[in-house]
Length: 75
Image (cartoon, rainbow, N blue to C red; front, side, top):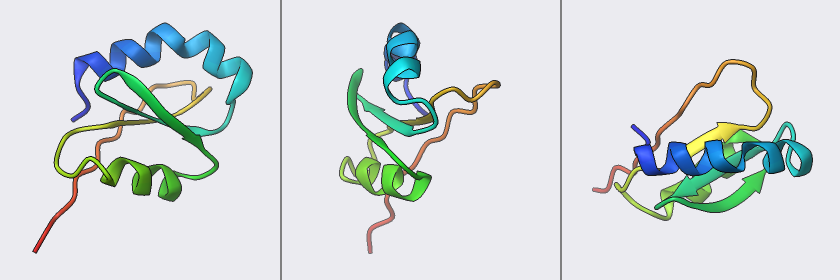
């Protein structure tokens, strides 16, 4: 699950993101915007750099929020 810190950071920047990144997938980690990506797979790859630490991936402009989390499985 994404952290409350990442959800708050997204909500605080929502209007600006909707103007600049509508339809893109954004990644937040540690309350910071990591980047905006054209597809979920690219956003997921960016989030994986943080290992098992949770990140928020959100599609900008999506009507009903669906927060996604991603973690890496290492062998």
